[in-house]
Structure formats: C-alpha cells, structure tokens
Image (cartoon, rainbow, N blue to C red; front, side, top):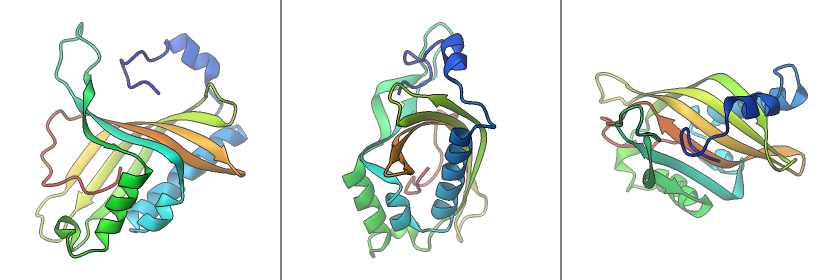
Length: 186
C-alpha cells in the first residue's frame, strides 16, 4: 500500500473503490479497529498479536519537511520502525521482562480512531482502510502526556472468516517526535 504521496491512487479511483458506511464490510472494518484499540489500550498485547497475519508489514516511515512541490513528504528508505511478525512478537515479549524499563510502569494509552475510510483492495479478500489516529500516552512519572496524531493506512485481510491486519503504515503529522521512547504500539 502506498503512503500518501508515494504513488497513491487518484481521488477518482479511490472514490470508485470506496465502500459505503452502511455496508457490512465497512461495519466489520470499523469493529476490527475498535476491538484492536481496546486490546492495545488495555495492555492485552498477546491477544493483539492474534489479529495479525503471518506476513504483516508494520511500518512508520520518517516524515520529511519538504516544500509543496517536493513530494512525497515521507522517506521511502528510512523508518522509525519497520516490523514483521517476528519483530512484533519480540517487542511484545519484551514488555514482560525486566529489560522493558521504558514500560515499567506501563504507559497508559488511549487510541482515538476517526474519519475511517474503507476501500476495495486489489485482492477480493482484502480491504484497504485509512483512518485518522490520535494516540494519547501518559506515564506515572510524566507531567504532561505525549500526543501522536496522524493517519494509519491499513490492509485488512479476511482469514478463516475473521479480519486480520496484514499491513499498517503509520504516517505521523509531526516531523520531530519528542517522546522519550516509542515502545508503544500504534
């Protein structure tokens, strides 16, 4: 799936593949996103892993400050993180160790999902889902919260009758991430 400005399809092509909000596919995608947010916010990371496909691509490209004519605005070679299922399992397993100092005590997070758009994908068993994300994180020793805003571009795949996350690209609005660490899941 192309990041915004990385060969994204034209607006007319996207409109022709848009799935209406009153459709069962849209409702299923929305329910998936809400369930996922609940798992992440309640610290049920092992359960969250079950929502991923074996070939998951989970990326956050570095944002670039460019002039309007110098698109795309995101690096095509540099990522804040570029994970697959194995590396996500390692990240989740680390939360339960004494070496996860950045998450002991754990962060309290709240994922706010809005402006959800669902599109037909090139494969009939997949949906392309774009949503705005506002992620609030606070730690017990932190005076003010970290706020992350941006867009998530997801690919959801129907596997054995249930939607699973096959791809996620997180496009943050901020160029400089001032958080102490990014051990949380977006």
